[in-house]
Image (cartoon, helix red, strand yellow):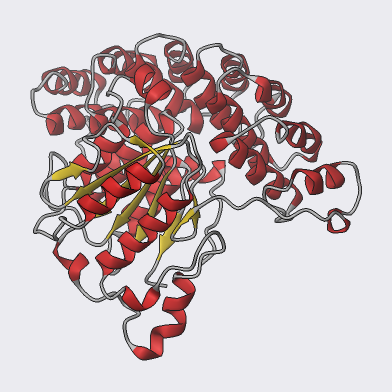
Amino acid sequence: MAPSRPVASALATALLAACALVVGARPARADFESAKKYFLDNVKSPEWKARRSAYGAFQDHDGGPAATLLLQQVGAETHPAVIEAAASTLAGMRSSEARAAAIASAKKPKSSERIVAQTALLAMRGNDVDAALVEAVASPNAPVATLAALALGQGTRSGASEALVKVLAHPAWQVRGAAARSLGARGDRAALAPLVARLEVEKGRARAEVVGALEAISRQRLGDSPKRWAALAAGGDPSTVEEAAVLPPTFFGVPVTGERVVFVLDRSLHMRDAHPWVAPEQRERLEELCSPKDGERIPWRQVKTKWQLAVAHLRHAVEGLPSGARFEVFYFAADVKSVFAGKGAPAGAAARKTLDEVLATIETDDGINLWDALLGALDMAGAAEDKAFKAGPDQVLLVTNNIPTRGDVADADVIARAIGLRARARFVPVSVVGIGNHPFALAETLAKTSGGVYVNLTK
């Protein structure tokens, strides 16, 4: 199955859908004073569900007072599910007063308040919003500029293309990558030449985003082939250029382009079941799954169960990681464990040996604690946004087989939206490989919101 590249418009669609789900799940209050009382009574509760519910009280109160109070309170919040609820509620507001409050908070240093405000601006429209985003994308603060770059990929943002091209030279690779992604979403052919120029210097995720943008704008799939792209940008015929595209390692067909990669594997009981292609009549499909375009063919005859299939693709991806890359593997059932104690290890023979030794000891078990597995992966370098942005993973790849049942959050919808928001704020795509009766909506929402790929192996 060929993975499709998510575009920036999918982020807004997912956000608005999340907003509808969030506010529908929490009580609205008919008058503002009643809503304010409910909010203040619950927003400091020790229970995250009560704090999350508090933000829904303002769903019918689009205006400056509600938006300002929401933003003031969320600055002290740390739970991802509550932060996402605040962002979804604010994103549903359309008044000029609410927009002004979001624009002001988007400049503040408190990470939760800033992320909520910037996420809401993704769904807001207006010349004031566009001007604020153009200003923010040039910020030396990389997390601020990254989210602004993603927002500028939306619709008809005034001044967006010019601003995005300028920050292709930003010091932070996340900003450059986000700018490239948004230029691709906008389809502006004037960006072809600047994007081609970036192929001379980019690497890792930023390079992959540039290639993806070039393909989106030109509608040609030339891959990582700088000379062929240069020919196209110059008005020539790329097919006349003899240059094979460089292929990154893959995981179930998903390109692994990060330099700090985390794999997250479901080891719940059904992963020991036979995979769907074990029957002789399914051999052709199994061989296809085990014949990646990069690297060696996976020995498909040895792959009998879902777990063995996931492990085989993990080994394939890790074998292809370039020198200088680091990786970690989280595996979960009711509990969550990691191969390298949550610190990751440099790709190479020593790390592969350790991985094989640990994999040989892993058994399937009861329970599905997807929340703590994904949160542990994203927070591997720490939960603080600035630290996670600088030293955390830059790509997460998940294999899941069943619906969540354990952990602090077991609601699939909440997991998808909250983890998706945290990943997007750090510019970390979470790609999801679903085997069997996995949570389809969770996989799709999580991948779209974060900018990852959803590989649905039931198709």
